[in-house]
Structures are given as structure tokens and as C-alpha cells.
Length: 324
Image 1: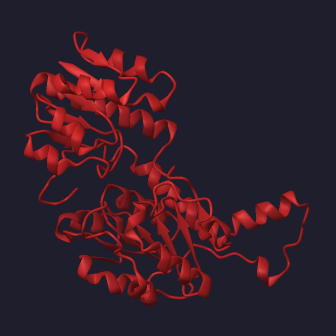
Image 2 (image 1 turned 60 degrees about the vertical axis):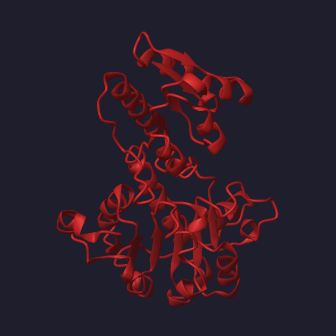
């Protein structure tokens, strides 16, 4: 089995890790250039990568699996891959706890004014007895989780521990009835109940995959439905929100604030207005990336490569019919 790995940017001992955990007779290649990648992909059985353009897929003559060490597969044209009989799989679930924790971090940072208070401290300011410095609690607030998959479920567990009420949406809610009962959700519905969740939530957290259905699912109409005291959190993909509409809403106070781990442009421009807003907390798509989650994602990816080697079914395969 030949394995081509495009994970050099992970740094550290990634090459040693992959080599030591693949089958001992596997031929492992870490291309140094794009030209070398296109050449090596021709006779590869497994490709370990995050971003795979269609022209690279076209070059593959015997590829069986494209495996990503991330929860999403939107950096890979898996429809083009499917046409050639190539399976595409993610590491979905391996970073669910890390991403859920990050969503809690963003909510807490917003309502307790963490960036502002930190900046006041390093300026040597010390004053707390004023209304403008008051924070809020998560206790008894309502959390709307849009996308009740593995990350959404982990988020619900943590939010319940904070005493929050939980409204959740899932494309196929009938598949999560057990979790609804176990976690004590206050509401679980399909995407047709989006308006209900937006109108009644103090925090709205996006945990959706990027599909045709979820691109700009939050726009002007949806933000208008939210409370002007509500916060919008995005830990999924930037294109799930119309960013221009969001910026305008934040400027005009249509919602209280936003916590964003992702942006419409994957790397936002330095002049993005969000950088200068004091009702926004921003992080650089780091929500699901911790030491522990990295190790889980890499381990899972290698295990799927072993499944190809043994002729066993792979796990977490992307489905063309669902779009994720």
C-alpha cells in the first residue's frame, strides 16, 4: 500500500508518527512540492490531506481513500472523488469535546467581557463598581444549538452543567431522541424550527457542516428574529453566516455580540471590521485543535488507512447524498 501524506505543516514529529503507525510494509511519501504531489498521487492507495483540488483527484489512478484529520471535508471535492470510486473520510467526533469547550469559552468571554477587562488590567485600571463593567451569567439562559451532531451533543452536556436551557436543531431529529432524553433537552426539532430557536435563545451556536443548505443560513431575516440581547457563536464554518449582514447588525445593536472562530474568508483580511468591534470575540479557527484532539484525529486517520490495508470498511465516510 502506498500512502501520500500532505501533513508536513502539522510540524513536530508528524512524519515519524505516521511512519511508525502505518503498516510496516507501507510505502509512505511526504511530497515537498506540488509537482511532486501530483506525480506521487498517480499510484497512491491512500491520501492523507486537508485540501484536495479536483485536478489532483483527476491524477489519481488507484486511490481508494482520501482521509482528513479534521471534522469537516469541505476542503475536498468529494463528489469528484465519488465519481472515481474514491472514498473520502473525516475525523468527525475526534475534536468534538475541544470544539464544544471552545464554544463555552466564547460565550463566557463575551458575557464576562474578558477581552475588555484584560485590556483594562494591563493598562493599570482597577474599577468594578460600575454598571458598564457588569457581566452576566449563563445560569437560566437559553442556548440554541443549530446542528445537533457530535459537537452539538458535547456542547449540550457542558451547557447543562452551567444550568442552561437547551433548544436544539438537527436535520433528522428522529435520530437523536435518545440524546434528547438523556441530556434533558427543552426542545429538539428539525431545521424547519429554526425561527423558533432564533426567537427564544440568548445564545445561538452554529455547529453545522458546510453544505448548500447551510451556506449563509444566518442572514438578515434570521438576525432580525434574534433578541437584541442575544449572542451569535460560530464554531462551524464562516460561510454559514452572511458576514456583511452580521457586521451591520453588530454595529446597530441588533444583537448583543458575536463569538467567531471562523470567518467568511478563511483567512480574513486585516481590515475586516470585526477586528475593531468591542462586542466581538475572535479566534483563528482553533476551536477543535488541542494537543489531545490532534492526537485523536491523527490516530483515527491512521486507523482508517489500516482499514484500507486490511480491506475493511472505513469509518466516517462522507456521503454524497447528504453533502457531508
